[in-house]
Length: 374
Figure 1 (cartoon, helix red, strand yellow):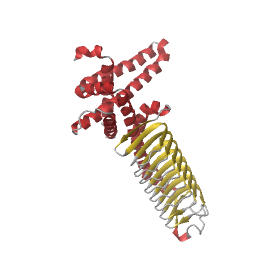
Figure 2: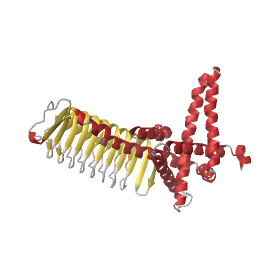
Figure 3: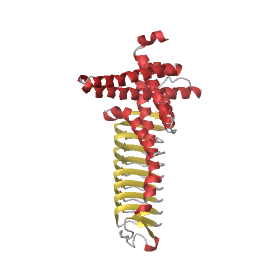
Figure 4: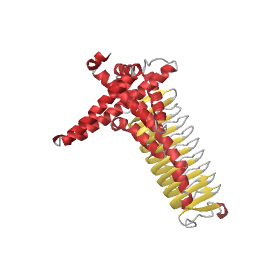
């Protein structure tokens, strides 16, 4: 299941790479939530509920009342978070108080503001220098604790350091290669509240228990967000074209599926034929690249049409405004991602959705070629 989530994440992330590479940042609002994606994704407007941020540089610079979901290379939180915080990146810095639980992952993770709930943190270098009112689950190479922890701690580290403000009020469970090798000062916690376990006992926690589920949830949420953003922006920029494509797909799904199958087969077949000629071997990667791009375009269009169809079944009608198109994009991205998780048949359904979307793109782009087909 863990590999399936990673495959899904990569599938959902690929179509958004151009959006994340460009300087322009795209965003849309849904209810009280805000979605932002781009090279620099900064949330600086207060008064929002949940926020979803994805990019290279990701920053929360305004207080929010809900939860923050953040992924990027450099991730920073400088203002209070009203509920939970979920953040992953190369560097993750939390300098704003979190009223709920926090789940953090990165090469370097620094927490300098209080966490009112439980903290789960994984990385190479971890520094915790603020109060933690709940429990702490931490795994890293170098871990430093320099603040009070009210709850229990389960921790695995190659090197563990305690600062002058470190105090543990609960129990401390250390997972070590050689139990007893990590020194714990009595000023931090009495020896009778320190438990030591073999590192092998930590592996079920890291590999098969809590952490894969956390990464799966983060990957799933970010993937859905990115697909929704790409589809929403494309639908907003090309409303007439997208309306024509979703009409093609929803009105004639089997016809668009067949057209998409033929179009994709043509691109892949062209790559194979070029390779057989030897002279055109250098053009084979280009043909296969266009086949991949075509499949991803089909997935975006198919997800959007799926969302429109779902909302129409719910009685909302066809989208006429940008915010309604964004809602349809989000609904379609969520439904498609959930369908992909179905064992055995999920990938078949996603492939069919992608081919049908490609068929709709092809029929809309070349209407005269298909006018005889009705």
